[in-house]
Image 1: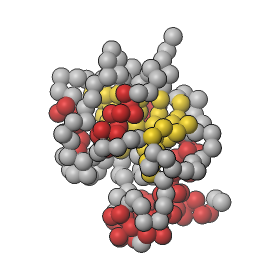
Image 2: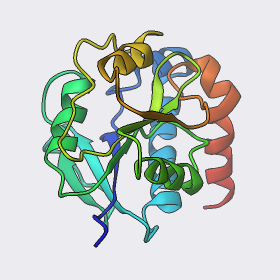
Image 3: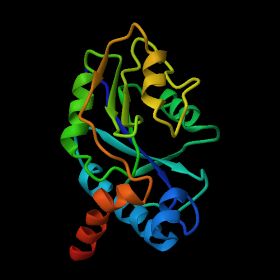
Image 4: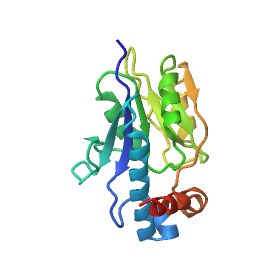
Length: 202
């Protein structure tokens, strides 16, 4: 019997002045908040109902809401990004885990499916980002959980390389390279069209 597949979308509760500080500094707090809300809604529409996996929202702050109905939530807890991802991945029910952020406009269901296929034989899978980080990480978690997130220089061009160094000797797969939206330049290239699309389809 095949174990369940778990897709976890890491999301911060969209609030004015909270989160996406670099983006807010470049495009304004209201536009940054609008982008957060639009992206979360679109991701859940695109991925949340897919029967090939169970979708969860890994939320921060831990006691926040309301969140969209129909999607189970779990708290990220404290610590840096790596500590929070490790905690969530370690405590999920049996089966491979894929974690994504909520700020990558070009994620498609086919990317998530490809990640889970890779975890059929690989220990981990990554979706590289253009800035040296990654927009997706997947862990097989069998026969045991391996934490690849120690001593990673987050929010830097070294994040992916540092994580891969923690997996030395393990088989790792790579997906296509995408962009996350952390600042105004990335928003002008990729994020603005997401907001425009959402407004035209309300």
